[in-house]
Figure 1 (cartoon, rainbow, N blue to C red):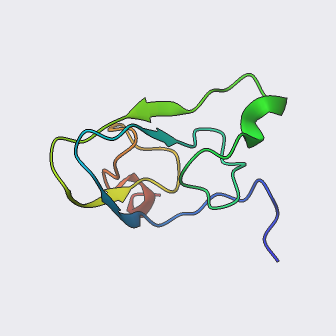
Figure 2: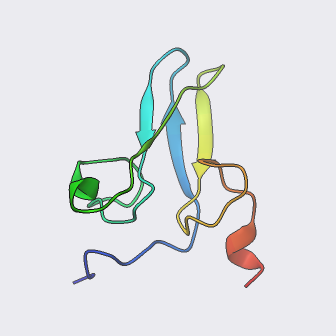
Length: 79
């Protein structure tokens, strides 16, 4: 069983829809480690609201170290 604050090191492939708002987990406490589930309420962090320009699969950062939040930029493979 994973600890609640364990971060995912690999990017997560998800299908996102144009025009829909998404909330990327910044704190790393959400159950699926990708989208906010409200677990940040015990912290001073807030989720990152974002949307995309086209319907397709995207790779979202799991390690939370990307410079292109919320999208993976390969940072996880550089450590």
